[in-house]
Image (tube, rainbow, N blue to C red; front, side, top):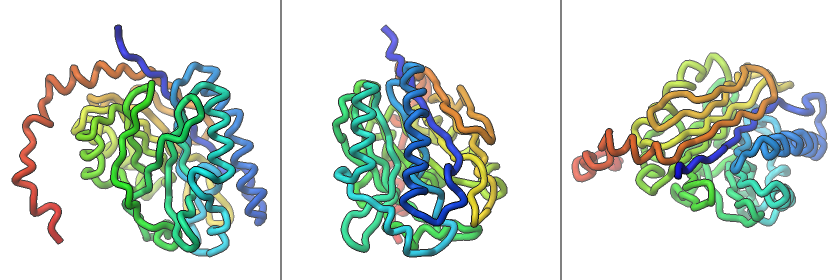
Length: 289
C-alpha cells in the first residue's frame, strides 16, 4: 500500500505593520496563524510547517535589541505550548519556526517539531547565519546552530528542517539525506531582487541530489517600516525528481497542500544511485579551513 503523506505549508503577511508594541505584533501574528492551521487540518494535512519566525515580522531588517524581548524558551515558552495544544487538537504534526532564547543573551533561529499528540520531538537550530544588505542583519540576533542536522521520526515520515539561508549550502541537505530524511522543510523569509532567481533552482536541486521531498515556504507582502523588498511567497513542494508539485501565490496568505508519495523516494534512489556512488574519502579538503 502506498505511503502517502498529506503535507501543508503556510505563507502569510505581516498582521500588524503599524504598531510598535512588540507584544501586540506577536499576538497578532499568532492569532492570524491559528485559523490557517485549522484550515490545513480541515484539508486533511498530517503535517504542517509555518514560515520562518512565524510569530513576528522579519525584524532582522534592522539591528535593534528590543526584538530580543520576543524570544522564548524551547519547549517551555507560551507559543510552543500553544502550538502543542493545536497539534493535539488537530491531530497534526507541526513544524514551528520561532525565535529561541537558550539563556540570557544567547538566541537561536529555531524550528520546533511537535507530533500529532502534542508531544515535543525536538528542534533544529539554523546553522548558516547571513549578515548582508539589503537588511538581513541576522548575526545581530542569532547564534549559529549547534545541534547538528536532526531527522525526526514521525507517523507521516522522517522529517528534516533547513531554515532560509541554509538552503544556499548543499552540505546540510546532504547530511539530512544521509540521515534518512524523506521530507525536508525550509521555512524562509526572502525578498524579490535578492534571491527570487534562486528560489526554484536550489531547493529542487537539493531534492534531486538527495532524493527527498522539499517543502519551501516564503512569507508574502512588504513589512513596514523597513520595506527591504517584497516577500514574494510562491511556497511550494517538489518531489525527489526535483519537479515542483504545487505552488502558492506571490502575494496572498495561503495554505499550500500536497500529497507526497514517500514510496517514490525508493524508486528514484534505485534509479539514481547517488548515495551508492558517493566518494566521501575524496572529500576531505571540503571540511578543512
